[in-house]
Length: 287
Image (cartoon, helix red, strand yellow):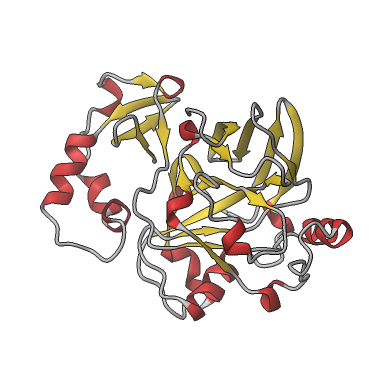
């Protein structure tokens, strides 16, 4: 199943590129359930699915291209990200030295990092470049959405804690400051186009992931090139944090990162997760 948030915080099911509004059904389900530590829609995803109308295909729908897509997860408690998790990207970063002091080649030594949840936006909201005088890069990533509380999870069970997956953009100002500081600017975490539930993705480490900028392909790889698999990343993160429903795990970007500028058009996609179109503007300009 594919779930989206759109327009004025509506919830939709995406069927063949059409969005069916299921906000009222989701609200009824969640109102009857106890509060949860995490995003309630994600925590109670099974109950939500069971409570959806049976006639979705017959209901009125709108083309996905005609709605404003928000981040499919509304209330992540944490955004956890992997800094150097693709073999070719590690070589690229070491060769360019574009963020001095931050180019550790071993992810288990570099560790993971946190991004501010206030940086999260959906595809329709776009990216607002805050410091145009500094190099600011796109980074396309596979994102795992945690479905239930996870602490010290063994690798072989880690994918059982995933609610679903989405495409992400980890927008990055290059420089000497701490990673979390440079990557937590408003709009610098893009998630979309929607949440694709775990059952639709057979192997998250066998997906093509790509990004084009103004129609030119810049990143194009397989998630098989990851240093740590999605399951290994979840296990690693859960040794340090208790992961909660709705927490986002950005799994790293492949080679081909490059600068963005106001006026750019980014198309980010992944097998099984569809694609999102994201416009880049100057900070202060309207989305």
